Image (cartoon, rainbow over all chains, first blue to last red; front, side, top):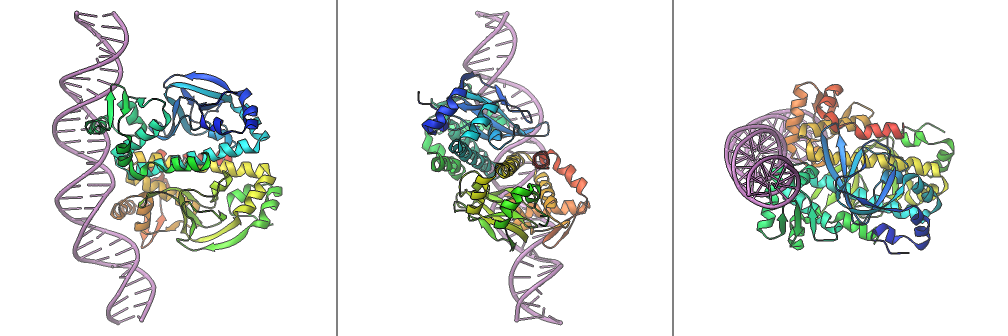
Length: 230
Length: 230
DNA sequence: CTGCTACCGTACGTTTCCGTACTAAGAAAA
DNA sequence: TTTTCTTAGTACGGAAACGTACGGTAGCAG
C-alpha cells in the first residue's frame, strides 16, 4: 500500500484506507477540465494528488467568482458528504496533474460503513467552509494586491513546484477583477522581487514578503486544517 | 406536541422530533447577544423561532464581515455537525426574539442515534455553505445597492413582521462598508418608495422592486433550501 | 420640558478599481 | 522565416466607494 500524496487519504486509518482504496482510480486531469457543473449531478469525487482545482460560485449567467481552491490537501464533491448530489457551484482544473477519484455512489456506501472516515471528511468540509467564508471577507474588505497575494499563497501551498501556470486573464476571472488590474499588481510584485513572472506562469521568489502583503487575509483556513487534519 | 415555527424542526419526522425535543429549551435572546465566539467552544446549538442571527467571519483583529444570516429556517452551530466544536466565526443576534436551543453534547448524542436527523441537518449545512459562497460572489462583484437589497431580502424572509430593526451603523458593519454609504443607498430606496425608513428600522414596502435591484445576487441559497428542505 | 445621546443626512477631496482600447512581445503555426 | 494568435504592458477618463467630518433631528432620561 503506497503512501498517497493527498493529505486526506494520507490521514486515513489503515482500515479506512482499505475500505476506500479499491474504489479509487488514478486519473490525469488536463487544464480547464470541468469536474463539477452547477446544478448537475456529481458523478465522481476527486482527491487531488498534484492537480489544483477551483470552486467557482455562480449566480445568474455572468456573475461568478472563485470561492475556494482544492489541491492535495482536500477533495472535491463535498455536496456528497452533505447528503446531496449537486451544488450551484462549478469546479474545474486550474493546474493539471493527477488525482484519485471514486464514483460518488461508491463513496456514499463507504461513508455508511465507517464513522471515522465520515468524520475525517466532514472535518475537511468544515475547513473548506472556512476557506469560503474567508474568501467572502477578502472580497469585501481586502485591496486587490492583498487578494492577489492571498491567492498566490494558497496556490503555492498546493503546488509541488514553486511556480503556478496561470495567465493574468484567468487569474482575473478567479478574483472577479479586470485583467489589466492583475497585470499591474503582478508587475509591482515582480519589481519588488517577490515573484518572477513569465508568460503564463508565476514563480514565488519571496514568500515571506507575499505573506506580509496578504496579512490576516491569509492563514485562517490553513490554521483550521492543521488543527483538524494535521 | 406543538408545531415549531423553526423550519428545520418542523421538517423533522415524528421520531426524530421525539428524540430531539426533550433536549430543547426555549430561550429569549436579546439584541447583540453573542451565541458563538471565534475559536471558542460552542456550548449550545440554536434553532431560531423568531430570532435572526448573523454569522460573521473574522480575520486578524479588525477585519470582519457577515457571511450568513440564520433565522427560523436554520440553525447555528454547524461546526458541531461537522464533528468539531468551534469555528473561526462569530455569531450574534441581530433581531431579538425566541429560539430553541440544545446543548452541543446532547445534540451530538442524538445525531449518532438518527441517521435521518443527521441527514436533514447536513442538508441545511449544504444550504448554508451555499449562502456563504453567494455572499463571497456578492462581496466581489455586486454594487453596494445590490448587496444592500440582497441583505434586506434575506432579513425580510426571516422576520415575522415586515420591518427589520437595525441601525445604519450596524448594517454597514455587516456589509463591511461605510455607515454613510448605507444611509445614501437606503435614502435612494426610500425616495423610490421601496422601503419606509424610520430611526433604527427598515420596513419593506415594495419587495418586487428590491428583488429587481438585487437581481441574481439574491435567490441561489433560497432555491437550494426549497429543493433540499422544502 | 429640557437636555443629552444615538442616529441619520450631507459634503468634499481622495483612493481604488473599472471599462475600454491600443500597442508590444512571446509562442505557435504556416 | 513570416504570419498569426495569445498574452502582457500601458493609458485615460470615469464610477464607486472611502475617510473624515460637521450639523441636524428623533427619542429617551432626567
